[in-house]
Length: 304
Length: 304
Image 1: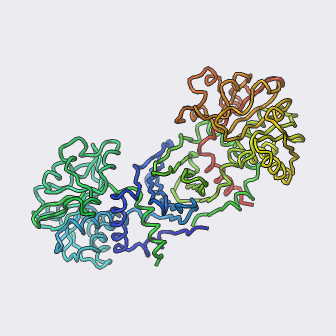
Image 2: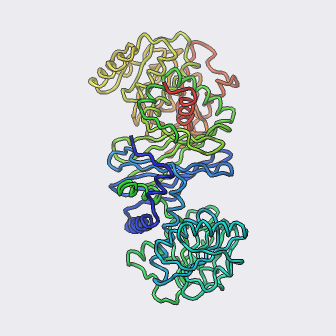
Image 3: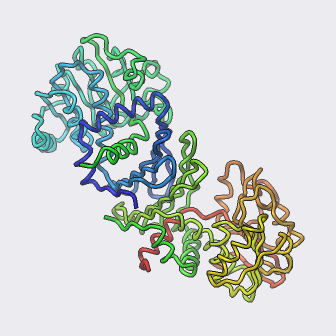
């Protein structure tokens, strides 16, 4: 029988430091063509859909994650890893922890290579699950000493900061998105907002900005003007930006042409940040196949 | 944690009699629109593909089966059932037994309603896994006393008959496809053949014929001339015949227009066999969602 993991083992074993290191390897494997990351597929089941994001690391494994869009609550996600050679199931995780930790690790891998090395101040817009894991992931690559948090609900942002502090990262709520962004060296957008949540003019020179929320035409937490503010714009998968329906917010815009692959930067084939005063924006699309990638590495290196 | 089942529990619990009864219910649920059975989706992973066949029974569950096309060996299949209301994972089966038993049960449910009630002679073309489960499934709905088996390899067909006999069904090998088909009341085509395996002129009046092997243009174990021989042609999913690529062998032919839904016949909304001398052909496409349907019923009614 294969290894079956639950949220408990994922939370204990997939620490932000491990997740960032493994995602960095995944980005390089994808860049070099070893990791196959096709666009997700989904199937219509009447009141909801099942969505599958698959991946394969040549010679090692193939696998997928499934999640649903039934109802208001999020159902349990399933991640399956098969051995490449035999097709036998190696590991199954029933876990809603793996997804956010993976997205957080992608953003943190980007921050690690694209933010200024001495960056210590951070502004966060959003107080959901993904905002928390994104912040804690970035805290694994930078010594954050000043974290300002904004969301529309003052009660939620206060409670959120208490949760962050419990994780050993000092955070405080602020009264406006502007107050969270102005003068910060790192800015994270992690909302469900259908409209842009910040004015790009607020962004300080030298800042690293990451966006991981809605990114489709008609529903996006940022617009082309954010990219216009940037000296460098980066994404984890240029290919996936072509696979959205409704289309990716930047598609067919001049800003889309500027997107550089994070894997190419990690591989040294494209330039990343070249000046401490540059504004660098990272537009996360959630490189496919990375859920199974992380699960395989977790089992290979040992669940703690 | 959900229930995790392996081939052992599936083989013990999903008996042909239970599987046929449950598939009959599934066909009716699909006909009445309660069971959603969208076409399968697949994703390209370089050297192979992952394929997902999903289903949802409104108010009860949603789920899927995954299988791969990597390498020559067949990898392990995974079947997942979620509770409708919460999205929680109820059951996971890691099983290559469930798929063939499901296809066998679909064919047997068709035989049960479409073959003459007193049919006892059967000709089988094919000696693979699917041929065995199809034969044993039909043996659950008819008292077979004379089973003739043909495949090209005499050693294989002899060994196959020994396996069938071990299951309590008397079978003997024959030297030609023609010898297997002529005068038989039931005829089963269960091959991987890319070309038609029988001459429809061999089929006796009154016979029930089922085909479950390849069915796409350029690779099909039967052709339109088999349907031309039939007084009635039936399939388990007309919708799925439109979703093949390459196209379904009958698509855009006059014979395609004649296909009647098995669910409609079971529901009494379309006529089935009306005369003992009619030839009835059943063209199985493997109604989607039925893997999860069977798994849900198995767990609900008790793994034996």
